[in-house]
Image (tube, rainbow, N blue to C red; front, side):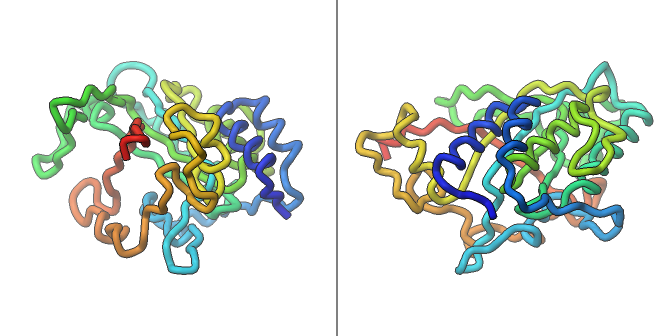
Length: 272
């Protein structure tokens, strides 16, 4: 069984944040006895909508979807000038198929998605149809000074298992020969370069454990033990989020897909 003690959770969170072969090795040494569930070769049975995670995620007692605890975001730049050639596209597809074969899409396996930016589509000579509005990022108010992410692609990996999410990352980067017993016969290392790597965690108990270690948390450890977020409450309730069906694009070149927004926001919790 998985040991969910605070010391173990803290170690695994730190390992995911550090990343790399050493962190993966440390996680494997502390991995639970339960095997990581394998994926499938029946790719046609997998959903075509990469953003449709709900069917793979757990729900709480009230029907609210809970995403996996460990998150890895890889911001990627496409190597070279211009659009990817056919060989690069085939290599990328094979690399992601390794994940599908190696890991069940579940909290115990790895759930993943890949998104492409306006900068990526600007590489192509043919413009997008006029019906597609894909603007560059911009500040939403005059007092903001955001640093925009303009990398070509964003890979999102998520799992309750730190060893699984780190191994999946290493497989994509060509740093391991096998992923959960599946041969890594293709990777992204010759197609993309990692411009930025970011990690995160979510889950009851994790913010409370780390509130005394971080700047910006008011004195007195005010984050409740049961809170999954530093703000002291839970977000993402079933009835205050748009459904996956609602946000899915239903026609045009991106039919079956959606848009994705990722931001790193600094909040002054004492002001709240």
